[in-house]
Length: 135
Image (cartoon, rainbow, N blue to C red; front, side, top):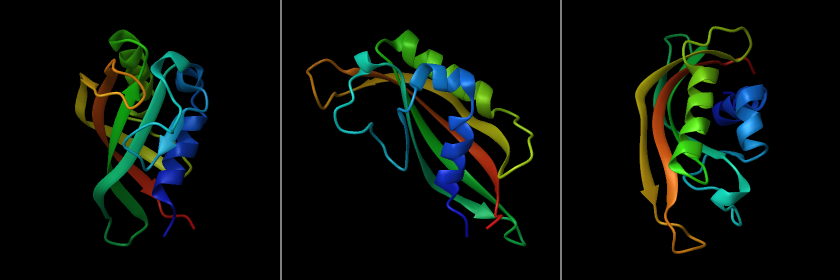
């Protein structure tokens, strides 16, 4: 079985518009950004697989993936979310990540910060992503 999270991270790391907003602040299999991150550092994206199914032959996996887009403001967090949406929605490409479909549109909220008293703006969304099992 392939590393689904690593495949999704690699796919997203090649999207120029998304990388322009988050740089290397793209973290797999976590609910929160890496220690030391602050929204003033720029946009960030965290994601984790939250379940899913293989197809009947195990040639494709369809994980449900939770994404959290961060930014210095709610507008900046939404810009990261929109870049993610553009990178994934109805993607039909060759390679390991084959296709993606939004499960729930982004919802903006503010989560308690770990490094300050100011809550961090976050956009939460979910995608089903078809990933080829090409080990």
